[in-house]
Length: 503
Image (cartoon, rainbow, N blue to C red; front, side, top):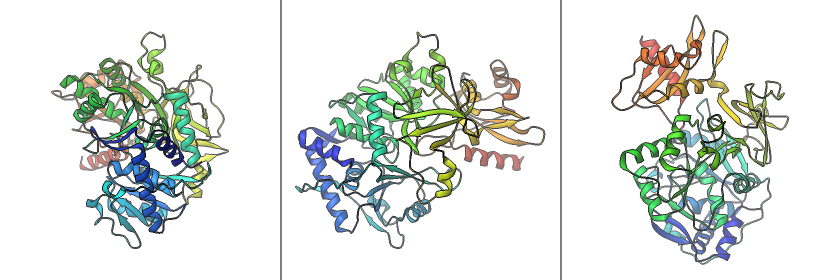
């Protein structure tokens, strides 16, 4: 089934329902949304785009992004969303690797996308005035819908193949496990539409809800709170760092989250202290999901009532977890041979089911290493308890081995964040002649504080084993993050190497 059918059906059944907003201004009804999609499709077909071809979208969040999704899907082509903050050379590599010769981009980026054989088009809202209705072409569940390139923090990015069937399964799992969507809801695209926020458009199209793009095109705390008060019943996808920023801003400026109905958080570690503060500030708004591009948004869920629960005996332990398996997948914790570990043991999180990718684009070697005997090896280390809740410890590549003992950075980071002087913390390993590796913590101090190694040492020793405490604390003004809010530990290791050489 072609995903664009869901938009066509909503447009036929509810043609006058408000669909697309720029800020608080309604730009289009669902009928106008669908006709704009048909107009873009007609343009792309005239340009020679055929089913299966890849069409790149290199834009910040904007109303045209939604038209691109469904216009490309409607004609059976494959959308290739590219992070708008990538360097032009990185964009060129992705286009070449994907065999993509057509790019939709902003007017300001046209001169940058100057590659041989690549056509660039700047889609503008006023170009989509049309009365042509073109039914979506037939697609099977195994046909490619989205080619998602990983962030590439450890080498060249890989193209994750996401099919129509995978996205359909993700959407139905959302309704079964995560949350409901109502026609009166508004999904607010404050996180990049090239990633999870864009994927989540599909459930809101199916329900006939509203889609709002901030005028800023990105994440601005004051703008988000203002739009939520105006539009009401707002749903957002947010990285944990965004949740922390919303909490900090609201406390300083007196916003209570009026108008926000749901915030789904994912995409990085949510520290216990941060989510406790967020729930104290906003109430029962939050739902956690865990997924990867290779299994989008659909590995585990910690539902709203469990995120806000403070009465159950195990509430804190569960709040530190990423929840339990979603309906469409099987999840286990396995050792190097793929054998399931017993509850409490740490191993690799493994997933299988209809939501798992068929493989990486034109990369059989990487595919064979990542999907073994039908199981997706996530690269994330975790454990499962007797109730089925999974606690993530770290990426396998981030684990520190010191003196033969495994140290999981997230455990140390959680403890550091309990101290009043620490605003953000990220822990990495540094080479050590004596121990193999030693723990180094990069710290962003709370405003008005300076970091004291002696004070933090004492704090750590009160909570964790001596061998886990950092041997060095480095105060920084900010942690390096990618466009999705994930801390770039590769960059921290590089910075640490430069500091060590300078010493």
